Image 1 (cartoon, helix red, strand yellow):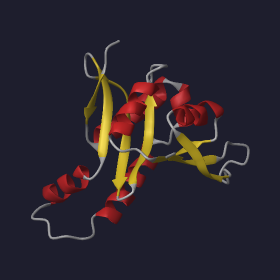
Image 2: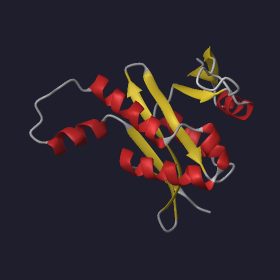
Image 3: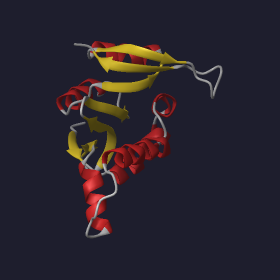
Image 4: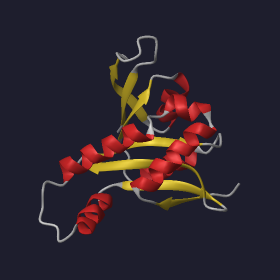
Length: 162
């Protein structure tokens, strides 16, 4: 199925991820929820944009959306089959929520994320996930046990290796 990656806003990503988590179990088990990613985006936007004198709420919203990169994989009929969010900072970009409902599409999406500045990410310590990111030049820089779910996988903080 032919697909293209298009720029989107965080609301479109939220709905696509929620829908895709219901479509494919591996997304539900390997990706943060849309609500968690929305909180992460909001925290990032608060850090990046200190209170400013915007002429309207619309201007403020546009400024906040402009500071993030949201990409969705769209198939014919506007079927949003995957996507990711990139939260850029002075040192690179934090990749969050990368997912796709069709197996085998991660490589071209990852290349796109790297082209847009992805340099770091957090992922569950699931061998398929950590190996996927290692193939794209990331290494585990830090590890955190899963305190919320003691029998669940830990979290790897991965950075792009030089």
